[in-house]
Length: 195
Image 1: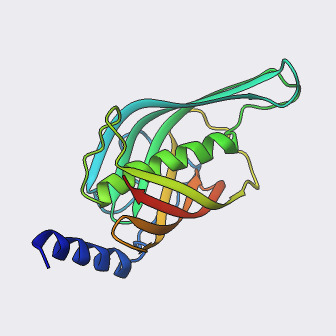
Image 2: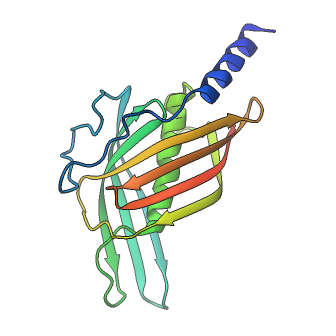
């Protein structure tokens, strides 16, 4: 077996053996974390200041657009756990539609946060404008939204990877749980492909 194959086998074994970190913390009272302060009691392994956006625009009723833009300030990465700090802008031309996080935008950003995290775990540099290295395909998504996220500044998204199981050297099954300000929860299962 070559050195590269040995390394991949060891990495696959390590990924399967590791579990969710015991320090996935809750928000401080009031749900607010000032920009630059970490949720965890441990310093992140990596911090990425991103300054990118994730945007969604759609309509439910004709000629009544709804839009949301998330501006990401930074990503904080640990083993099997990640956080994003972001600001959000909301617009709706529909009646009685309060400013709130749209769950679809939350799902879209969960995919990006998972991508950033997987690059970290797999040893790749996250370079936003270069070719993708990992592809995520969701097979099951469950969203719980008992209350709305109304905060516009310094919203914190947390993501815990609860399972990665490699099917072969390039395909793995993955489960994760993500929350926005501990109010909206997204639980997902899917596959990741090294490309």
